[in-house]
Image (cartoon, rainbow, N blue to C red; front, side):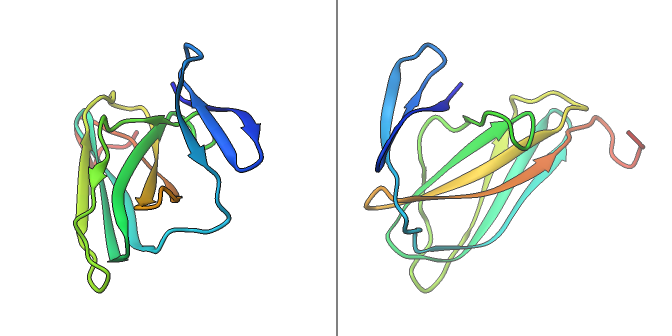
Length: 139
């Protein structure tokens, strides 16, 4: 699991549960120039499909997706590699990621991080979904 630790001015280090530093992230007061137009989580049987759309993407490197078991819980990155940018400055695009490392009847929360070419990132969300075998049946 990833968590925030060792906060210093303008730098935040992320640590794995083992305590091993895996990367430094600069903290910026600026946000990216990626305009997110929608973000949703669609549940099905033993998976959640996270779908997002951008209206524009200026200097976008790509995205990371994080999952937690509560809205204010510890979020862990679910994608192994950055999800590459496919949009343009004047035209966004649609993306989706299938998270199949989930269990039915358990609610999951997701945050989306967009990262620009300079390393500045902006978090979006959370959105949530509860996978189930059959939909249309009460919880």
